[in-house]
Length: 363
Image (cartoon, rainbow, N blue to C red; front, top):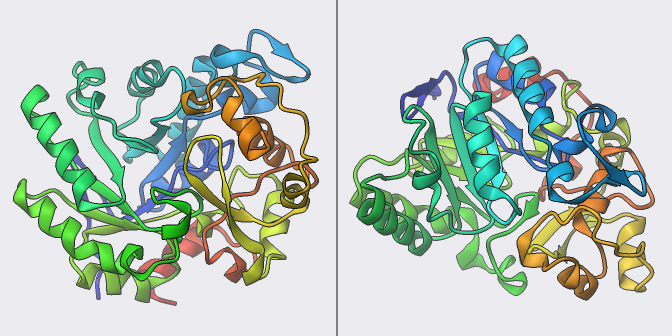
């Protein structure tokens, strides 16, 4: 099968492969820029940008970490990330992934548009106000992430009624993806919630609203997986974890090493302060959380609204902002290392160019 270009709004991506947005600091300028350069859609994660280039763009820090919303997320750093990504990929389309659950969501969306994002991808909640936030940026395509046909229908109804707008594409994310899941903890392993079983209903719902491309995500590994899903009716795929195994990935060398040494049984679900289960690699942190001995929760960064200024973090036993940033900084003991269910299959670090070639040619 020859993989056809993917059109999202006014933007055409050479290959129907989207690199999933991964934060803190896993998909920033080097990874996103190189994916777009090689014909996929590189996606910059907009969370935790205050940590970019050793926190050089923040105004104030506390305990060695960016203080509060304005510094955990840095507008100046985001603009620099986009600028540096553009130096790599030129005019090729580039996306921004913005977690709906973050504090200052509206501000970050507008900043990403101004910084040069061609496509806004957003999940971890229903972004019912996204068209309003982007009304001054008509060329920016809007792509919500959903886990069901019901969620897509709700978004389409609300967007059309209030904004006369429909999604330019939709990403259907199954429970084998890394990071946050759109399912209850106990549902993540049930057959009816697996990606291949969700695709038919979401593709059918998308057709009810016109020609909305459906992009499949979660547990996709190689060209045979891509072909299988395209044959089920999707227009493209999103892949995150495989791109961690590239030289250009912005993740720390320690993160890549932990992934290289992970076994299948090391990839586990845990509860998250964001309010969704999350999937990652079992490390020392998992043991500390289970024993209620994880690092003290201080809510320095005030990152996501569902956490209620650290209250949910105390319930699940850890601060997600601190633990993800520790992973970015290479702290093996305290870092939270997200991975999809196939992360253990990464055997060596390769270039983005080689990975895209393998995915396109099936080598």
